[in-house]
Length: 286
Image 1 (tube, rainbow, N blue to C red):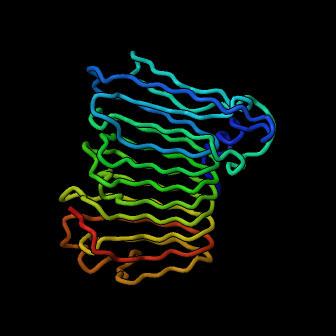
Image 2: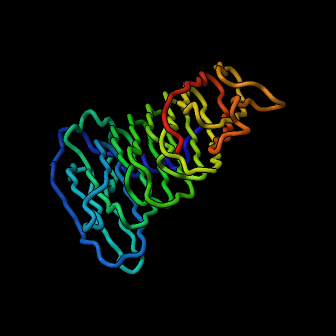
Image 3: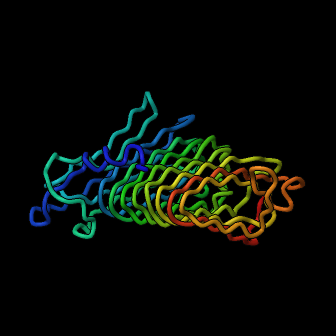
């Protein structure tokens, strides 16, 4: 299996050798006006990425340290479209994408917590530390290559979210507080990796969320609040499945409280080689 869009992202940011580095700094910011909504695209091929909430009166703020021999900065805002695009673009040099050769290349992005925002993150090789808790996210799309990523929702989303989607390559991915994302649909497509999906948080009361996970090779850990009703359909080839706390009814597995729980999670998990593990935790559901 392959993550859609990741190969295009990696080829677009192919870099020059370490010896040709010319590190430079670029910044951009805009004060918040009367924008009713916003779309944000963050493109970062290699290095360290950080995204987090910013001040209420700032629409967005970005600080980029980049190798000018290999990349050029992107700092664009379209007032008519209410669209922000920040990051880097490749200069079509040949070379590798070993982010450890560029420990100083970094992008930090802050977003207004009060403007409803559709967010798209596209990053290749490196490390990503993304805090989305407390923002006003109507939808989130994350495409990542060979990276180590932490995606957090430490506080509840301020608005309802349509979908949170991941398309990833060979990744070490850890999520925290997905219940705070308040999305009605969560999807993950992955080639390989070690993936932890943590579903603790403040889920909307009387809600049902669908979760679709497809992974080719690797381990998937599902951290589930004990108070949430869970149903799960597993399609596996050579993968092990830990079904603790679930009972089979027909073609699906159910938690004992599924029929009475006010918050329900309906899973479909497909994996070829690796493992699927269930871990019950005492996190809140409302």
